[in-house]
Amino acid sequence: MLNKQGPNKIDWTDWTWNPISGCLHGCDYCYMNRMEKRFPGIMEPKFKPDYIKKFHNAKKVKSGDKIFVGSSGDMWGAWLEDYKISTVLIATLQHEDKTFQFLTKNPQRYYDFSLDGMDNCWFGTSEDGTFRTLENHKILINSVPKKSIKFVSFEPLLESPKISSKFYELDWIIIGANSNKGAEKPPKQWANFLINEAKGAGIPVWVKDNYGYPEKLKEFPKKHSGN
Image 1 (cartoon, rainbow, N blue to C red):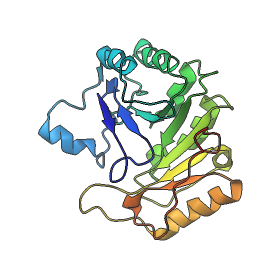
Image 2 (cartoon, rainbow, N blue to C red):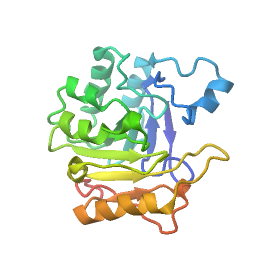
Image 3 (cartoon, one colour):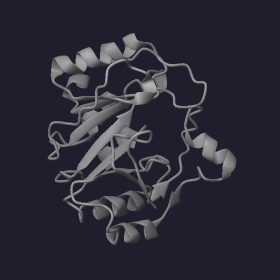
């Protein structure tokens, strides 16, 4: 229900929580494909309201902790009913002392919900450098309130990243590689490009260890109260 994170895991969050799991995007590089082989059907979308009740009663999650919501799927997928997503969002408002991080390949879905005032939530999207996610950072900026923390996870970076002027309105970027065994590491210059553009705009950067980048760079958004 709640999984502790840290070094050698998802190191930009403290916990993962999956009240909505599963995904129908069908990305061949998804790390959950390994789990699908072990547990057939695990990628079928599921809504787990009991996870919400358990989260409300969880004493191990402390004030100031960051919770990545939906690490084992895409809770903003077009296949999900609005009320399921709304139920999770309402639950986050009852824990204003914690930070909830959302990530989706379908950022236009953010536009379908009233996200104003959700100051304890960060809204992100994924870009892998390929055509299928090419416009995601632009869609994200246009779908989320201006005051919200907006971020892009460039992971796994499969091709040279392409950005638009909307990139400079982001509050944070994450850079990572394909974590599957034997996967080729992306070139250093792809990360260099993103880092240089972000630094020039004052955007914090988090480079995951799986990229193999020679420098350690792990920064959080400046608006995050824990900085």
